[in-house]
Every structure is written in structure tokens, then in C-alpha cells.
Length: 133
Image (cartoon, rainbow, N blue to C red; front, side):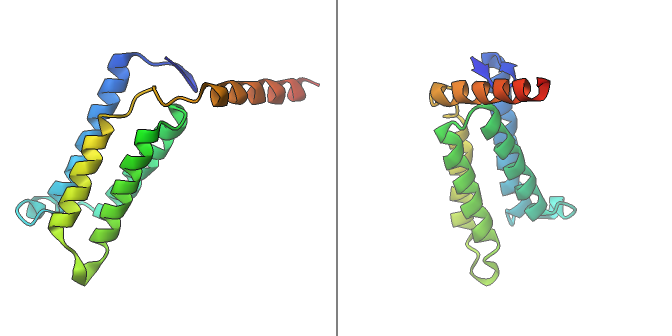
């Protein structure tokens, strides 16, 4: 499939999804009362922000697949739950994180808006032509 900077093989997309899922599931380990003692040096908020930033980049590269919006919104909800301090409910947090990890599997190129791809290419061509003048 053709993406923003060229083509990616199915195995590359699969490896990327696997990497993202691991990063998402680590968000459970960092907060789980049974395992969080092992990760005291991890700033969970920074981990969330870094993951969301990477997902934003992937969103751009893959021309905004719909499933990625669901992943990002579930992670944002999990972060909001984590930051609720006194009202934090680990079971809600856990469900949101697990759901986000599950949604990653659904990311593919079937949601690519080819008109948007064409429009982006045309914008780039115009921009390059303007610079040559």
C-alpha cells in the first residue's frame, strides 16, 4: 500500500502494531498494584504522552485510519482516569487500556481516503512548483 512516504509491507505494519500494543500493555504494568513496584522509575504520564505522540505520527503516515482514532481516544480516557487521583478506579483504567490494545489490531489501510492522498500529493507538487519559480 502507498502511504505518505512510500510503501510499507504487511509485515512492517504488523510489526508496528505489535510494538504499539506492547507499549500500551506496559501502561498496565506501570500502574497495576501487583507490578507497579517494579517500575517506580517510570513516569507514567510521560509514557502516555510519548505513546500518544507516536500514534499521532502513525496517524499522519497512514492517512488517518479510523481505528487509530479509537485507540487514541481510549488511551486519553485511561489517562484521564489515572489522573482522577482520589477517584481512580484501576478496573476502569485496565479495561480502557486493554480495549485500546485490542483496537490496535484493527488498524489497516482499508480506511485510507484516496482522495485525500491524491489531494496531498497535488499540494506537494504545487508547493514544489512554487519554489522553482
